[in-house]
Image 1 (cartoon, rainbow, N blue to C red):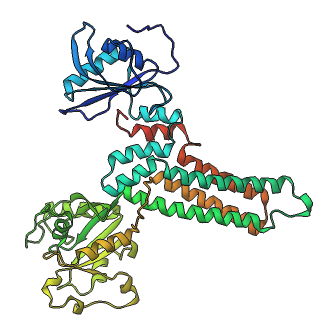
Image 2: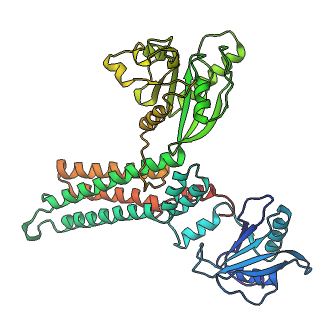
Image 3: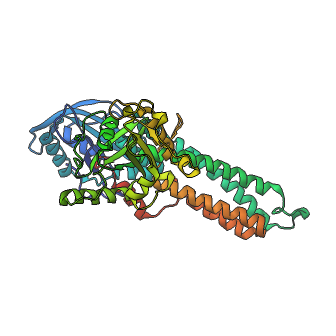
Length: 463
């Protein structure tokens, strides 16, 4: 048995690393100084060869067999966590995994909390914060594009971009600090020459490129919230069914068929849409329908993008209709007008339109939900509206990354202002320092403990 009097700097943790349920294989992962000894006692073996699959039986305290399977040993520091790691690969039954995990606890391991394996890898410099987050993003990916982007971030591509930007920023700080400390060196005014201004412009350009990449990465990871709204019988539910590729909503000719909101998550052109179909907006005495309309209005206020569907064969003034339905005309960037039922006209290009300068920025997309006409153009317009055009080498990003990059951008703008308007070297240096602090938050060089806890706490237990 283990020597309980042995003093260790960190505890040994264990958790089931595969989904609970019936399956061919169930994996239990251990990390910490006692992992190796626990595996020896559990199997009755004398030793394990690193990175070699050993077939073993797992024994209970009374020497009865709990299960049998493979044991893999990864010695520190060459493991995921940087500690001694053991993986027990047994059968995937819930009872067998729980029995095996219970025995591991009896031998001295503690239950891992959410994200603790990744947190230890971060603490031991096996990965930075961006890479740690990318693990969870890869697991939670809702599209192939998001999964590929998460893996690129996991392998360090995003971190490399941030670190390259940091290196430029540090070099600029060093030059500015030197200009402050030695203002009369050889009679040269360092703050007045073009070197600092040129370096600052280069850093800003590089930051803008990283920010653009991060914006695409956030859309890949989080998707967008899209609400379909309009009058009854405009074709809202038909549009949802067309986009979803299945009959998710009941469609009839009876006004008010949709009484409640209906949600569906779909992926179009790599973009995840969290679609919400709503009750038709109108005046009604039906109490149930009124409740559905109220929920519809709440959903509209929370949407990233509003799809206003209207009957193009009947409605000739969509801008006035939008004002009536929503109380005022929504911002053009947050609404996409969809002229449905063009199949009822011989030539939808001849349907009445408004050609004022205001109407041009609200120009509708013409579709027929009945026949699927115009759906490809609609998807393209949705991507344009939310600014989703990820490159092939896109990288996954989170809201906190964008926030840090925007704060970095603001600090650099302040530095530029202090340099050119006030010629204040100390203030330029301080703005650059704030920019570096914001950038450091992304990879975890500078971050608060409560932020780390929130990030790793969102992981699954076995990660």
